[in-house]
Amino acid sequence: MKIVKWLFIFGIILGFVFVAALFHFDKKVHQPLNLTEATLYQVKAGQSAKGILNRLKEQGIIKDNIGLKIRLKLVPELANIKVGTYELLPSMSALDLLELLSSGKEFQFSISLIEGLNWREWLVAIKSHPQIKFNDNFYQQLETLTAELPEQSIEGYLLPDTYHFVAQTAAIDLVKRAHLSMQQYLNMAWQDRAQGLPYDSAYEGLTMASIIEKETGVADERPRISGVFVNRLNLNMRLQTDPTVIYGIGESFDGDIRRKDLKTPTPYNTYVIKGLPPTPIAMPSKLAIDAAFNPMITDELYFVSKGDGSHKFSTTLQEHNLAVRQYQLKR
Image 1 (cartoon, rainbow, N blue to C red):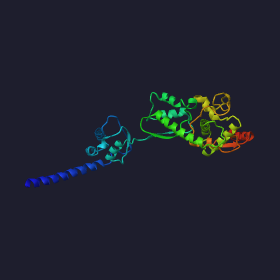
Image 2 (tube, rainbow, N blue to C red):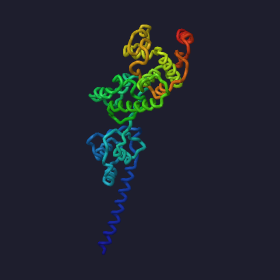
Image 3 (tube, rainbow, N blue to C red):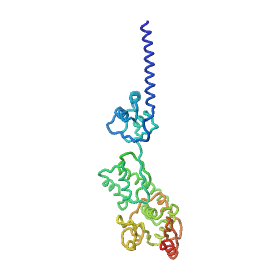
């Protein structure tokens, strides 16, 4: 009987010790990480949960890993960590960290692709982002994407926006997302367009939107400028817009438009050609697209920059020439 009694007491003591140990290690896993600022942490292929815990302890990010290893035994799904890049925050506990790595919720990087820039400029921005990966077959994939587009050109066919993505996202995947977003918005705008527009297709409207985008950064002017251009197209007048000339000059443009540039024929020189150029000249915003498909109803045929970003609009050539003298020649 005494043996049974002592075994019983020993069992109770052992149970208390076990519970105390669990409480101790549970407290450890809820301690905050040893970080002073947000830190990116990369999980690579082939790394195990235990190996990562050892590494984190060596780096001093966690103070103790025994409690976490016990938690892995109790909750095996926590050991199923996912490859990727994760953001560790000072407010996180060691257990939060383990749950994050097993959740696969990677840190989202971002890039803002700006309206009014052309494809060449976008490509520079995309290439300069350290977390966007260019594969050897990028241009081959791009050619496949553009093969079915009008003029086989990606110009204008990507929607300006801020795009979020995980580390080392393929550049072509980002381009495809921007292209799909533009397709969806353009199709919607085409369906909701005003009647009687001088466009034979949504693509022509996209081209007009790109010109509007380059002509003004003043949001409430876009429909008015659209109205002017629509009026000129309806009257078979040349658009005579400088941004198309600049686009036609290409990379050799030095910042100044000369009289000879206005007279030099290119497919984009709207001082020479009638109608729209063959492709968009930039990536237009949603506001510019809306303006192209819903222009202001106006009798105006001309506008000139005031030098402050806004424009003076005129209905006759005589009024326009006066405005040019007032706002351009005096400067």
